Image (tube, rainbow, N blue to C red; front, top):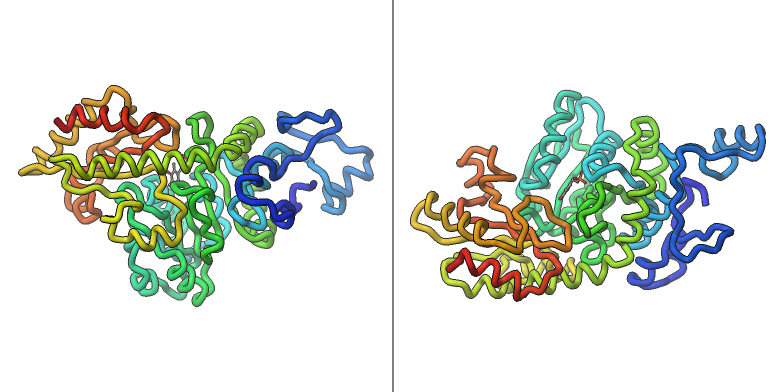
Length: 403
Ligand SMILES: *Cc1c(COP(=O)(O)O)cnc(C)c1O
């Protein structure tokens, strides 16, 4: 299979869990059962003529791992089979996936519309691109009219994450995709939180999906990686030149880890979601907890929409502690964090280990208090990325600081 070949597994008609385990596998003549890892920077050719044909794109075959490697291709084909994408390109990180998409779709003078509350570094990336003359406007994720109103003649990309972090707001993907289609602008969805096991944005009308594979695709906190998924035409015409000339390449070792991570993605995401719902329901009953935000709770304002476009709630929830003042709310939140012996105090997520963070003093600590309040991130808010421990142990850990 060449670096540019399409993914054939979709046509085979296998179901999701089967594709997660089998798609993209190509055995060598040794007959290895587990997928081989190709740690090689370059590839040899049969003859001068063969080399010339490969370089001219007239013969199939790998040339150099910056722009094509069989192990990377395994991960790309397997993920494409899960997202229902024609094709996929892996990248060194989630940020390099977003950067490469941005470079492939925009030039000086262009404009991007992005949802408020996306991953903080994504906002930093978009603000870096103002120096190349690409401007970004931010709109409320859950308000399709605001997306419509923000579009300008020079808008070249709509970008969002759903559910949002840490508020777990849900975007109406079909509605925003319809707006994108009407204007002929690609809708790009960062599907990091749900993964294709729970949500497939391309099936709902999005044009491009990006991933931080670092999170749930690996799922065990081992490697950094990213991916871009979409049509074969977009990959070959627009994205491949950016990747080939800029070189944000995923290493074959990391690709192998990620391809193996996909084999357990479905059962991990189901268990993450089950555990998160158990913890969310328990939190709702605790005195001192003012509000719990999790898409699978009936109390979530967009519960019906979440149920219509996601297979389960995912791992991430947020909750707010009561208090007479901001200072008291912060003290109450910090007491819960400091009471944890099991949950890891870290802003990272996407691991089998549960993590807890106080967004107002960490991930969102550099925002002004006014901007934070406007974004809905209060001093009493905590975010938990629920892992695969026994949920009763997670609740007991949180209970110490709540008492
Ligand atoms: C972590 C993350 C990223 C960035 O991914 P890296 O692999 O760390 O570069 C992008 N989007 C979301 C939603 C993330 O959580």
